[in-house]
Amino acid sequence: MGIRAEHEIHGRRKGRNIGVGLMLGGFVLLVMVLTFVKITDTDFTRAPGTANPAPSAEATD
Image (tube, rainbow, N blue to C red; front, side, top):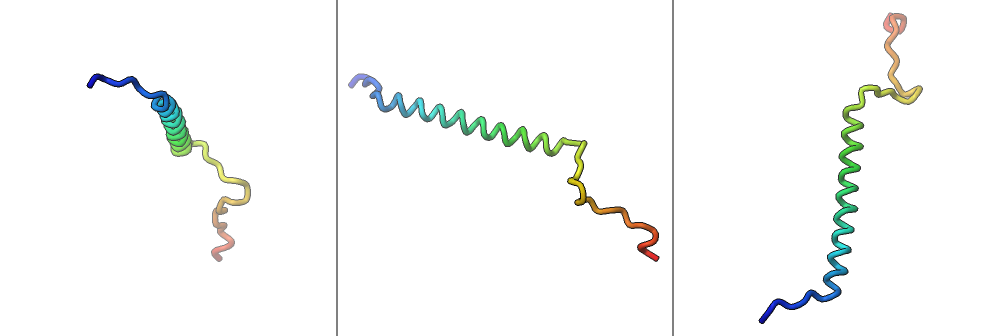
């Protein structure tokens, strides 16, 4: 038997699989970039009112 021609449904599946693969790859890349930016951010500031204040000398007396 010779090589049969690819059925039209296989072409549609292949196109969908490529699209899903690209979307998944883009999502993984987005998560990696956001994680990298969050880890390497040196200008981290807390929201106002959430930082622990330094203990004062009067509080320990």
